[in-house]
Amino acid sequence: MTEEPEDTGHGEADDQPEDEDPPTPFTFKLMIVLTVIYLGYRLAEVIVAVVQRFLR
Image (cartoon, rainbow, N blue to C red):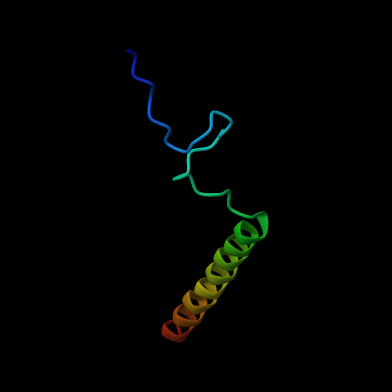
């Protein structure tokens, strides 16, 4: 008598494991890039304002 492997409910056609996250949408990546650029610009403005205040 041979033992058959237990059926785990996962077919052989599954290309991706279940624990893998879906890819990040392009619009989310774009939003992050634009936010970083904006915050960098605002930081530069603050630095310029502080330097101008102390150099007067």
